[in-house]
Image 1 (tube, rainbow, N blue to C red):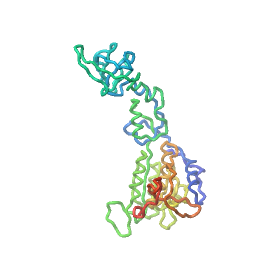
Image 2: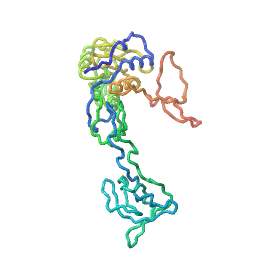
Image 3: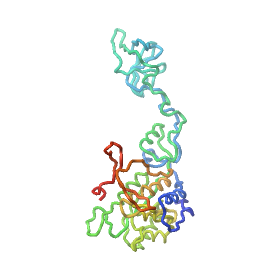
Image 4: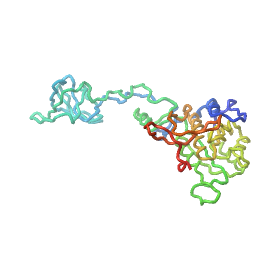
Length: 386
């Protein structure tokens, strides 16, 4: 791996950092993993575009009917009184015209079908009256239609040469649909990040194992794996590390050789058995540790060789919060995006609180409407919080 992210701007002096200082340290020293790949569209979900997608032709490529109905020339139509035309042909989507277009006539046309030359307007089939005569089928079109009614023009969505999607964008299902509409089957993307996750602690057991007194089931691994995979990264769950300094060092050193980033949960505080931070000091560099937030104070960030490492707290709520605030934006930058901070909304507080000065506190809450009908946020009930 060739990760050139970490340099002197990450130097850590051991002092407690504010939330803003932690963000500044993280945002000033990161750059994307430079390796890109040509990816099949079916495999590109959640990845980040490395090059813009440009439309090679108009989308739609041809002027077409937006409804099932009858196409006609506005020059032959009386918008005040309406008109009656002989039906001289049929046009289905993706098929050639059956019949012909002649003056003062209409063709039966279906949604998506290309407009035949000389016709530029369509009336919806539910708005017409059909009449039979010795000369064939006639269609009576009501008054009041405008030229170009019920028609989608060529290039109405995207003009040829226009940028459909810019680079450094994480691909959503809607984006894949937009790319597919250009006809492209492959696109240039930053390669998926390789992320490894570890849980730590002798007290941690995996779901499915028999419950033991004094133990706790590991909820962090499932949560972190879901959050990581949602970002288009590959995630290797490397299990639960025991409270053994040597084993932790060996596991972290080995995983750092084959991954872009390591995420651990637990073991980064100041207890005698918190060996993760000690291992990081021994194996590499610690660039950030201890943030003046609650929950999540012992969050750490460092590097082992070319591999970045984020040490999340063991508490599931703190681990989730630190992932959203710090880990997710770091993964965004490494994968080719700009720094992606969580979206914030200004909402009235439906509760009061006191907090320790100099510390940023994050609370779990629920949105509801107050007695006046205005949206507010309230503390999550204790039964739900646990």
